[in-house]
Length: 198
Image (cartoon, rainbow, N blue to C red; front, side, top):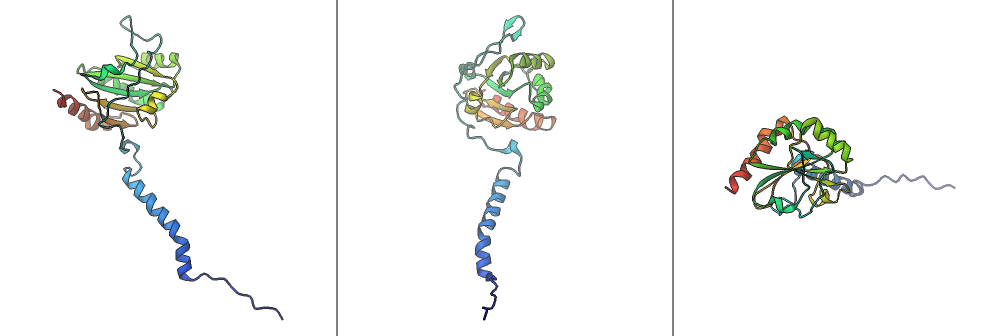
């Protein structure tokens, strides 16, 4: 005589226990999503805010000149005593092309020191990029292996930092400078930095 077939229907309590890890993961994912600004990468907080700018020297972009003089690379000592805007960019970066005219406009503000960090780029392409849009930078350091950008906490290009007169990072913009954030965010943070040390 054959045994009767049994159906293994899990009890409601067992079903709940099996679903708990999935529910927990979904709740945790929701918390992270909302804490990081609903997916907006420009709202990711930087651990470097309030800390000194990285003390990484970078060589100049070969062949880049301004009024016949070579444009210097990045010497970390330049951050003392001036408000600096540091932009990490590359010629192969599409949003960098979109933000370039705004950086050129910002470069006209003589109260600021404009610093470019050229990220993993070919020198010829980087020079062509600056020739096309105008070079807003008084200093351009070359980060050909990406190590300096790691020290700056860069997630991806472009990123822009405001460094106060004390040499401390006071603001970080992840992603491109846009007409929407240029006046309402970036210039506001620059003005705060300019007022802070005056």
